Length: 122
View (cartoon, helix red, strand yellow):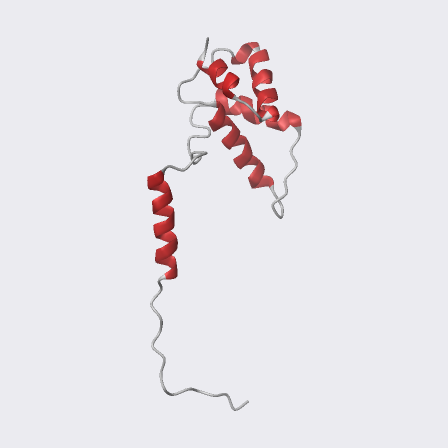
């Protein structure tokens, strides 16, 4: 059994993702590309979602089935596609780094207030 098939069998609730995987498995030209050790179904899904978000207007995006299937093929077909995406799950260290950045942004030094105030005459 291949790496891709193992990942496919682990999908429990995302029916859309299953349909995409079944489409990829039905294509003869994708058989050898699906077992790329640098690629994963989670990575493919994150790539598709990130591309859809780029098209969103006011947090709403509509993309066709053909475009989704095309993005899935592109993810597995090209090296380097989807590599820049963030992992779907945060680990403890990356979560701590995000919280630390957020706290540092909030800790801006306050300006000293003067006892003198300026008022407008207009």
